[in-house]
Length: 180
Ligand code: PNS
Image (cartoon, rainbow, N blue to C red; front, side, top):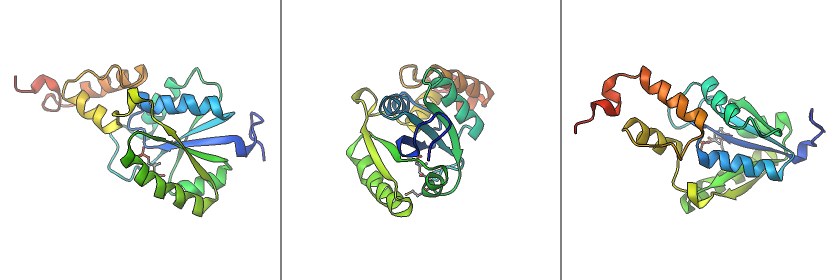
């Protein structure tokens, strides 16, 4: 089985996540995966398990698309339901996950085994760049909305979108209203 750009399905990698929003840590994993595999699908889950996302699906996808614009072999897709079903349906060869800290490994190991059991597709782990090992989407949101500088933790497209989002929120939810 081959895809539009001629890459065999087995050489297509999928990098799934909530991306609420994309961070520099995510982008680093995407760039490194794109250097290893001929085709990388960044797969945005429609309904994240954890909680209601801050950014709607289309906004999460747009921020990723703008950030990976220079990478010719990366596509942004969405999926709902089981990752294993999506993987079988589109025919990818490998799932890519980033690992920041040891506690990530514990949960990702069981997810990898479950996904392989359900789909037959293996997971490859890329260790996080130490510069980004403490960054998460939730921490970035918390720091930003409490007035911290997140410039170095998110791509430009994300920073612009977050500033626009903050402008739409009530002043009580932003740093302007913090007690001094
Ligand atoms: O960025 P996240 O929130 O850590 O990504 C988690 C994600 C989307 C990769 C995971 O929740 C997932 O695969 N969700 C789809 C539902 C599913 O397949 N669940 C079983 C996983 S073993």
